[in-house]
Length: 267
Image: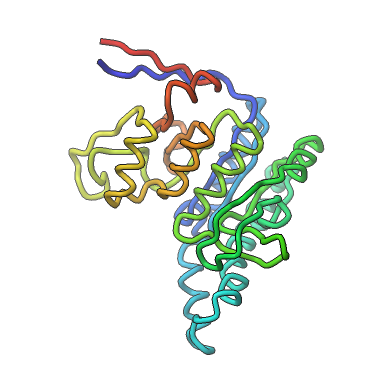
């Protein structure tokens, strides 16, 4: 048996662009063009962004140059600025293409976390500000990787935190799908950047993707897949550099039935 996947027109989507997809201003403009194109197809679009390229490493280096990075509270306050810069620049790029956009920090987007600095867990998402942004016909652009505690302390979510932000927002917004744009075209049998014979999967179940992530596959962060399974969020992994390519769908038949994705078994 093989899976045949058909994606029908969506109503609401979350698009996440990773660090390699927003590494410089040219790439930010390219990502902005993707978001605008999807919105122009009649969809409500929310965007989540990571920090540009090696920004996080640069910020850690600055902290080491001052006094080291042992104060986790201050490190979270520092590292969160990387995604905040990206989301402001992405919002500007979308506006330059003729669409209304507004940037949101994790706190402004309603991402509430526990108190574990540097590896916080999302406890809740209040989507009110983003829903109001949709009402204003905007494309809300959210800084990934970060949230805020109930005591208004800035927190970061740890490795792959922007993926987790995107999935959490997709669940809270009841989005049809969460598209993760990265530098590979989906989920493969091996790393396509080093293995020319790697084959792409059109569809991977949540459990299969969790096992791949645990085995070291870096295409999706483990916590984001576990959250997607819990919330039944359909995820699509696709390439920023080949945006017309369908990529790989991650989900379950139950999740697909509640979205605008149809999966059928064919021999």
